[in-house]
Amino acid sequence: MDPVRIGNCSGFYGDRLAAMREMLTGGDLDFLTGDYLAELTMLILARDRAKSPDRGYAKTFLTQLEDCLGTALDRSVRIVANAGGLNPAGLATAVRALAERLGLSVNVAHVEGDDLLRRAEELGLGTPLAANAYLGGWGIADCLRDGADVVVTGRVTDASVIVGPAAAHFGWGPHRLRRARGRGGGRPRHRVRCAGDRRELRILHRGRRPDASRLPARRDPPRRIVGDHQASG
Image (cartoon, rainbow, N blue to C red):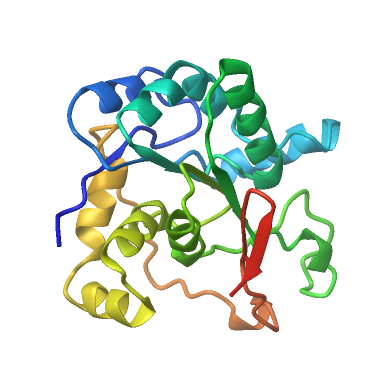
């Protein structure tokens, strides 16, 4: 099977806007990814959503797409980003509106299922502004297999925006990825994600373990939505 070429254009909310165009025009790509979320970013987006339920996503992603969506489609580069933040459905709607305004035909998908705010009391979290669980890359992979040109998500693991496209391209399932992780597969995924910033900050938390009693009591499957099609799994 042919190799897959994945580039990254964002390491945080507020990263260089020009990076998306630089990646699209700087060489051949199959997928372009972007990571926009951190804990502080989730707080910023939660306050934004509190002002209006239509908000809660990374607006700079739309600014980048306005300049670059046509180029991505022309070059057959599919885009995957976690810029949906607390409102991936809202961002997907905004991307469709942008594409219509630009006269572009684009298949937009979003992945949801990470938002636990409605279960905050059940989980003993008090009254937070936001409560989100990390999803993996399988919803992204399914969206891409279903033909999405742009996939936006909420909270996913850092590697998921890379793993999802790779899984869709190579036909991987969860069992295949577990074997890759055992051989150090996380390192190249991390390098792709952080390459756009060209710097790396490593923070080690020694001797700290998560409190398992605070984890969700049940696992709800993520929902992936391509256009008007919805599936669970």
